[in-house]
Length: 161
Ligand SMILES: [Zn+2]
Image 1 (cartoon, rainbow, N blue to C red):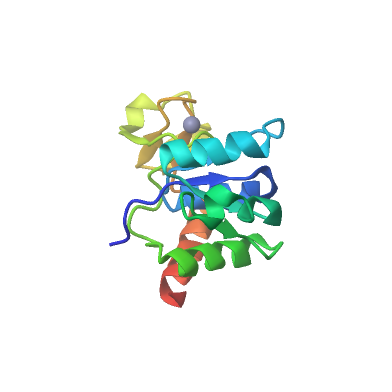
Image 2 (image 1 turned 90 degrees about the horizontal axis):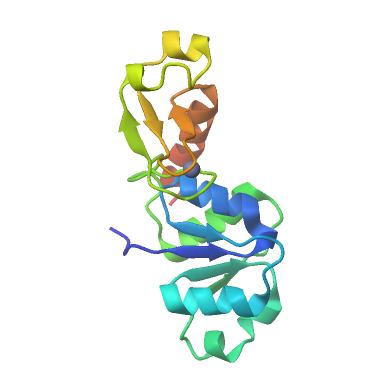
């Protein structure tokens, strides 16, 4: 088991942040207005690993002295970015996947089928059995084609380790 790592993603790696949420990792994503100081301070206060494409952040003293851990993301391609983080930090690629809201980072809760009636498209309601919902943004998740595609990606990550 990997220790329970938490992340904070710079605005330049937003898609990577969503994928880490798919894997179930607590990942904060700042909006485009926040500055580097805010990012570094939150990382320090909350014990989050910084993910960034901005090399200036890695040269800050709080990072070079080891008070905050930061990973410099080199690649532009999100698959490569994810592989880099999974392998650099030894993440579990499949153990807690699909337990967290991709949009707002909140932990998902299981929902019975009749609880989501009217909140999902009728076809989905007819054909799916298992649902999960984000108690914060109310977004409903189910094992549709999008989810299956992500599942394959997660499986290939787990194998590549
Ligand atoms: Zn949510």
